[in-house]
Image 1 (cartoon, rainbow, N blue to C red):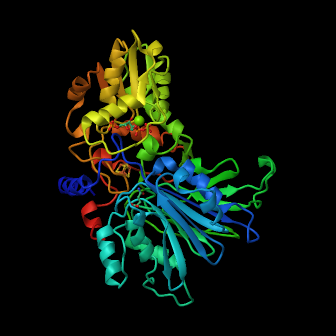
Image 2 (image 1 turned 120 degrees about the horizontal axis):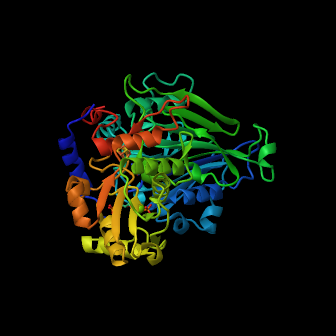
Length: 514
Ligand SMILES: O=P(O)(O)OC[C@H]1O[C@H](OP(=O)(O)OP(=O)(O)O)[C@H](O)[C@@H]1O
Ligand SMILES: NC(=O)CC[C@H](N)C(=O)O
Ligand code: SF4
Ligand SMILES: [Mg+2]
């Protein structure tokens, strides 16, 4: 299944180069989806819009460019969208206008179409069978061929967004027709057969939500239950619930929501006022493995989110332990690059038997700010973000653990910073393998030339950043750390590692012809 990687990388490089360099370091995050439906009597007392708003705020790390909410009272839709963070786009006035019994929401990091208000999600269209709202996390690998198919059926598209394309493709009648009126599950299935990768979707109709995960399970999606107010958790009986929620990550399930399970790869879950049910599970082509994005564990997700029954924090700790086994070093203290390196550093320290301590403090007010036109400014941004803790650094042999190196700006500046602060030795340990290939499934990875692992081998990189040593976790080591506890469970699993190996879950060349 390895496609002609060089030509694909070239194509991808050309597309990515057109994007402005908004984020000075790291990988581009992805999007978040969220949905909620009230059970029992409608109009419901459940604060649908506020719950979505809070859920989106808990998922803000996945996308900060724009956000939107669409609600339905059972008949009519109301929508509010805008550019920027959740806290800037919604206020009491806009939220109070979003009265409904069900709703969906989105925070966006753009992959396919520009970061502009016209591409904000959810997309809402009016079909022959009523209104439809869609929120999408992922990227359609076969976007161009599907776009052609949809246009050929006489449907017009108003944006270049693959998420609008999904919305319009859902308006197509399934090939077998609809004898007994609208058959939304059949339409969704039809879309999934036309485009098997990559998406987690929440699709809202006037009185129901469909939660859908692509057959490869590439993007995460999980279900939760809203428990009645003032009911002690352990006294709850299974049927008692005020509503159902669906979200990209379980960190969006706040204290009144109980985690239920993940949406399975290929599954279509129907959520109505009467409860949830699986309406279909669409299979992958024979021989193709499940491909959950391994970078959800490494970097994207919040540490308290659950995937495949395991907490992200635990997996990151496993990665750190594995890294210590693969690349031990004598040192006085192990610390992290906050914050996504924290758990791996703790794992490394525990396995190595070296004290764990803070080497750096992070200024939480420095986020992704403005376009950084030069490397000097990107690196200045890193020094604005971190400062050394002298007590733990001065005169010490330090191990600094980060989850990943992308362009290398962060690590270069941090080694200088630790040296200046008096570190005797600086050893860099990275809790994921070198990032070398593009992603077609919803993550914007910098260009081939910008990825430091494509420019310098370990020794040259060590010399360039001025560290005493530098070592990455191996691909096998990462997979072992992620799958260690999954082996003993009776579940199917499989992980995408394409940006590390160049082996994609589908044949990328032929998939663009799907
Ligand atoms: O090699 P570079 O291009 O400098 O990028 C790598 C850094 O970017 C990410 O952190 P980020 O600053 O995005 O956020 P975090 O606080 O979640 O770790 C990642 O965790 C690395 O620290
Ligand atoms: N990061 C994402 O998941 C983006 C979703 C979609 N491809 C968009 O560009 O809007
Ligand atoms: S290529 Fe990398 S970032 Fe993209 S889905 Fe696969 S593991 Fe995730
Ligand atoms: Mg980081």
